[in-house]
Length: 338
Image 1 (spheres, rainbow, N blue to C red):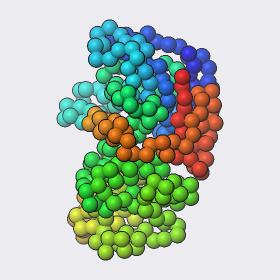
Image 2 (image 1 turned 90 degrees about the vertical axis):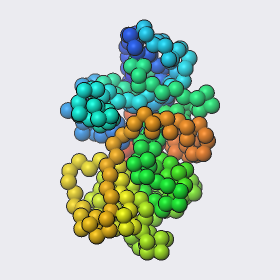
Image 3 (image 1 turned 30 degrees about the horizontal axis):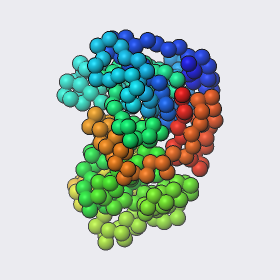
């Protein structure tokens, strides 16, 4: 039993972990793969030290196989392939009572407030599990959680066949949004400045625009015969992204805020009035988004293998974080935990 412990100051130590026998309503999972995401990087940089208890086991994008089940668990058995929807809502606040438990007022996120998946064995509530089909590889299964984010974003963006969609930011989430939007029938252009990601996006068959080299507004206007985009996804959390997003949609077009803005930024509200634009925030996902992500993954329509840049063993997780932190030739890194 091994686990990777975040100790602060961008330091992760791999050492002996402790298996916890599943209690009533719980299961123990032998973790196969876990992905490094933006939230994990925020923890790694110390930005979330107020929410974690060190030493802390991060990780919430994962796949694995059930090892043991606790009392009362009847829907799952040892040997089942699963992933985890890592949300712990309170079930009592107004958001939960209104059916929006994914944005619970007191939401606890597994891998942040509680230990996560960067360990050999992980004991979790059975209610957080979703079964993975036998045909889906465990590596692709570890992408279900971020893919569910993309499914949630595309669903809230009301993407329909024939739509012209702009994704501002071609990182892991932006690329998955582009893939899901295309699968929904949209024509997609991705704005990105990273040369590696631009090349990868082109390999995936997307039109791209590098705003450092070409005016994004002019690009979209030209591509849509001056009509504008049906839907825009802002994924960069940048001032530049917030500034340009209002200039891209058509009349009554839609903007989905995916990126997390830590402080207020200027937004052209006059543009919302002038074109009757719609703005929606999108936070994590709901159960139906996980189900859609699994369906899409199992169908084989998404080239998920191209999104995985590299797989590191758990013992080399520090190198994986340093690779992700570099922001260069990288999209998604998985950690092999077994």
